[in-house]
Length: 301
Image (cartoon, rainbow, N blue to C red):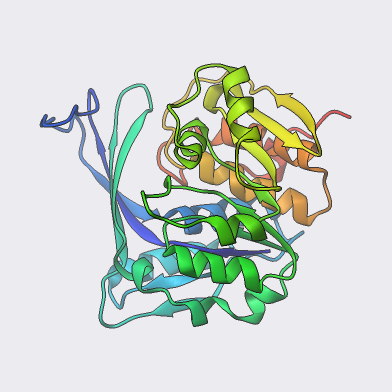
């Protein structure tokens, strides 16, 4: 499998409460620095879960700075092939500032840096074209995401995160996607409606999406909703004490994609991904508690 996406350096600032618009809050603990980026987080989670069953490759861009070394060294240590990651001398590695409250909820601001310089030609490679499954997000330019989806011969999984900006044309990438994995907020942004408050509203929004792809909506502590082939399946999450939800969705996507590459059905892959995300929120940081295969219960049925 191949992940095409972002690599960032995360600066996490623990706070008592997340700031409201116009507010300033003071950190309650020293900040910490570590590797991040949706694409890289997903690749790291995939490699941690796959333990050699599926080869994981990363395609993206970093700068020529110490942040690049931090990002690439961490992925390499986890077994991710990073030969598809370009080093660009003229821009800095992307970075993200994460405010994290006492309940484990977060607020994130991203400076894309080198991620915004990733080009269409960078993703038209054998790593993308020959992969059994390609995992994409929206922290790199939409034309690049579209090019990767169209170049892929295997299954395409799209995590539309962060939510598309007004004016972003996702029609081509949605046409090429086989599986769409939004959360409630991303789903609402894609259909131009307020965030759904009930399961019925979530399902109605899924059915109004302009795509024929199967859809997995992540619902945080409530699990996920799978809509595939006209069949709707609810996948509940176990109750856990969340320490930090940063990166939980990325962990979900990484494990889901590995399971699909191994031949699991979408529902069984979702069960594994929900279990994995539930483990991940019990550790601090986007990669603080990436689950091994042994920590994720096998799906029933």
